[in-house]
Image 1 (cartoon, rainbow, N blue to C red):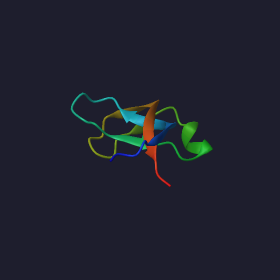
Image 2: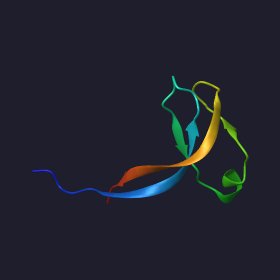
Image 3: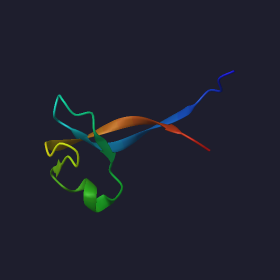
Length: 57
């Protein structure tokens, strides 16, 4: 039996490359003030966005 999962929306950096699926949670206020960031996997620019993540107890 599957239990229902709780989720929440988090702010994140999302890779702009069509070939890369990377994203990274924005953890600090200082990081949220950056205009852009380089993807750690493919080096493409990342943009600010949001992701829905599963919350575990």
